[in-house]
Length: 416
Image 1 (cartoon, one colour):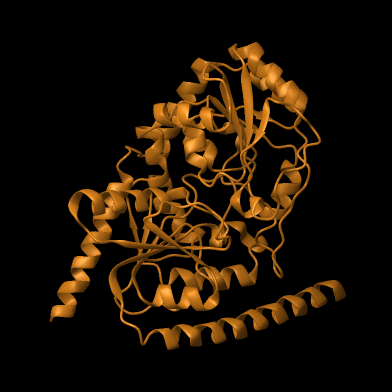
Image 2 (cartoon, rainbow, N blue to C red; image 1 turned 30 degrees about the vertical axis):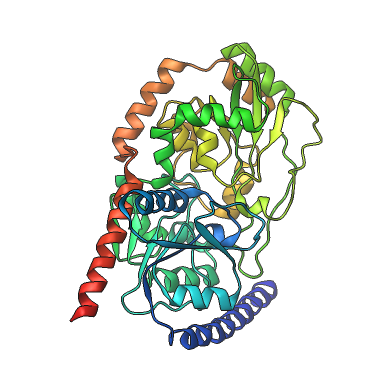
């Protein structure tokens, strides 16, 4: 009883502190509202500024820039980043994400595009358009109200605050149409555009296949498994933390199993979640091999998926994106019970998904060596149909069209 009371007091004190800070931040947005809104200014960010030029905002940006070049539009893209050393195309202005830079640029932009929440205390002006792409297609790990009692009060407050500002949430499946209501605490418009970050999987696989091999000095004829563990420790009741536990996979054994089952020479590309990659240069593996390459600092997960021949994760939603383009995908969940205890019940019984599931290295090697391609593709087909997944490679175009319609709407309104 005493420990619970102490914990509640600590959480309430943290919430009070965050609320006061958010109010102070909102005053800065109020000051910046004296500046006019530029209808064709688009502000983007990924993973709260920790991400770089990646995920769905990247592909929306590329479509807008292509329209600038070919159709003569004049979109101005501002990208908020915590690390200004990250690389961006020259046509995009990267800005260090600080309170004042966020307040100024968000207050003066016609459109916001993000794959994560805004900062608590952000204020949106009347007529501005906020498009939330989120950073998942179909999820394994629960989010929002689906976490039940494990959803912290502070996270709920921030989620509800942000969702009240959102104008559109993008969806690439019927499953997401339903899930986003509780998952994002959202009551607004959900539009079936498809997922912009999945466009590369439909349109540029051959290009990325060669490009990624060249970038990491992987032989052209070699095959790649991408290993991408998900983010942990990001939804605490009080101060946010990032878990950096050592990976327990035996990568030498993993490569041997891949070569035994599929033939050829295999490499493993290891890619941390952007929230984790921002905190450390390399994940702890204590395994040295020329077949294991850390690609965590590459900002775009999906171009890596496009270049891969197999995919491995624990609970990342990216496994579904690899799956629906036919890449053999596997789950390595060595901390399944602990993860569920911390995060909440998963959206799916993992053993009913199309992917073979392993809890240790022995099981992982066996899953790969005994991989049944025919059964996998049938399960994939059934899963896609059941969950109404629709990704045709045109999502970015649909979102750019939406942005253009919103601009025209604002301009008509301003003329009256």
